[in-house]
Image (cartoon, rainbow, N blue to C red; front, side, top):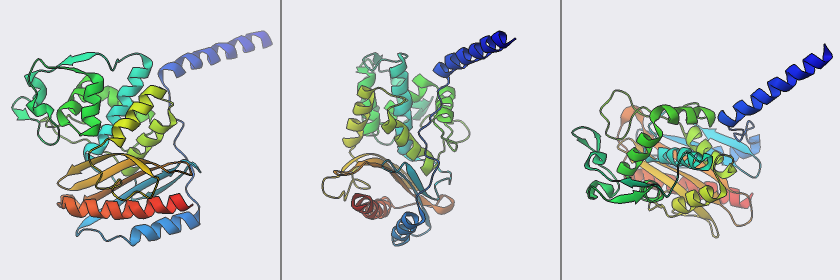
Length: 306
């Protein structure tokens, strides 16, 4: 009888090991919050920042040195604008690591790529809106366009290639409890993509852990975020010796930024900040930029000094 029990347990262990290859669950999300003194200090910094009228501030921080978190309205749901593109990048790079995608494969650009739905041309940031049909792009080039200059057409190519259902499965495994990918950019269907500041910060935690992506994929991602053209928010006032790898996002009612912040003498932090218009109210981009830049400056200095 004991022999059969051992064989049964061994069989179950082998089955779970096999399943684990297909259903990896992110273990990198810290369960502990910062101590009361740290929370108090960061809370004071946040409350000292002047907000644009009729807006709410959302902040999420992960300190890799202590593996602890801080959140201020971190679970409030919003459309994260182009900040969500870090999630698409992470999901694609995971598929590259698994061997399901290849950054050197080529996509031949078509005129249909310029539309979210028939008759609904993609606008906003980027340059692929002017690209000629028949132009070849590697997926690495498309990734650079999506992240470094926030190209919306390139973003839709990644959503289409990975598929919304698979992206939402990725989100579950990454621990993004408030994230749902509903539609492509300019796609005319009901509903809208949504997430939270905590979830967008967790994407950075997952990326930095390198548990889902290869070292090469991680280094590429950091390089693309370092070269992000929007440095008017978290990247505007970095303390001396500090490097910011970020991805910003802007809608009429949302101004946001999400960054891995690398310090010269301590482990980095992941920092995500959104300024959101109450009940969909507009947020002036310049005011949102200024709020995030000033708040990020204080937060970065605090962690550099501690």
